[in-house]
Structures are given as structure tokens and as C-alpha cells.
Amino acid sequence: MKRVYLIITLLLLTGCSKTLSPITAYTIDPSMHESKYSSVCKGKTLRVGKVFTSQNLMLKQMKYASNDYKQFSYTESKWANIPSKAISRALLRSIRDAKIFDSVSSYRSHTRDDLLLETNVYNFMQYYSEKEKKSYVDVTFSLSLVDTQKAKTLHSVVIKREVESKTLDAEGGVIALNEALESVLEETNRWLSESCK
Image 1 (cartoon, rainbow, N blue to C red):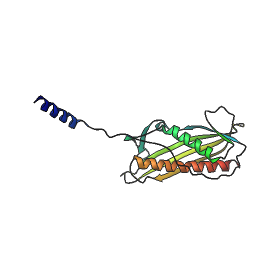
Image 2: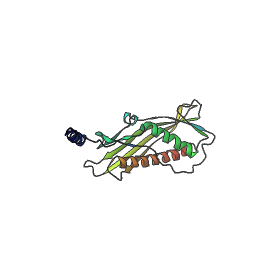
Image 3: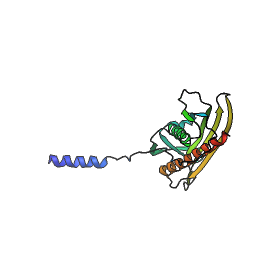
Image 4: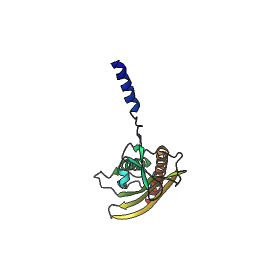
């Protein structure tokens, strides 16, 4: 009889325990397509400076906005890596792969390079319409190319991409963010190749 009570108690306790849904971790990893750029920057070296971002992109917590003023956090989704670091790595890899310069170094390098690329990420966010019937992402970079010998800014540009999310959830936002980032990185390489002329 004691065993019956024990089994019933265990079944009741098991039935009352709440199973938490797992948190899904997403990555920032834009797929880059190989593009041909003119070799006008050959003979020059570039250092990709530290990418400056908002505090939101220095955390693994995933945020979204309903409009320009209200931000919320996803409860069952997070970034696998800190976004600011992932964006920095993607930018460095993209410029290296483009082979526009003789060499491309990171901001941690101690080499003396001819040019410095300064980057500010103004926006990297998923937005929802007021009634949550639509969602899109906005990725906006501000870039400046600096002559390190003269300590002078040669060129500056703001590159902005908006991409509609195919699904109204975190996954749809991540896919759209990667797509928009890929487009911004391609435009950055095009701008860099033109800025050396």
C-alpha cells in the first residue's frame, strides 16, 4: 500500500512540474558572395578599426522594437555570440575576402597601416508594425576612411538596408538581419574600392 501512495505522489509531482521551453540561440553569419573589385587599392594596407555599436549589441539578449521608442526582449531566443563582436568579425572577413588591399589587419594589430576604416553601427534591429502584421529589419552603418599618415578623413558614407522578415518571429528577424548585413558588407567593399581612386 505504501508503494501505491508513493507512486501516486510521484505521478502528481511529475504532473505539476512545468517544463520550460528551451532558449534558441541564433548566430550572425552573413553568407558572402565572391565579387570582383578593381585593384586600385593595391599597394595600400588597411586597418579595420573597432566597430562601435549601441549597448544592446554588446549583450546576448535579443531585442526588437514596435516603433522608434519602445524596445522589448525575446524571452525564448538569444544570440549565440555577442552581436558587436560577430559584426566586427564579419566586416573584417568580408574586406579580406574582397582582396581590395595588399593587407587588411584588425584593430588589435600593431602594424602601421596606410588607411584606417572607422565603423559605427547606427542600427541593427528588428521592427514590428503597430498591429504586428508586418516585420522588417534595419541595418545602418556609418563608415569613414582615414589616411593614417595625415590623420585626415578621406571619405565618409552611411549605408542603410531594410529587409522584410518572411516570418513574424525571432528566426525571421535573424534571417533578415543576416541578409541585410550581407548587403551592407557588399556595399562597403564597393565603396572602399571606389574610395581609393
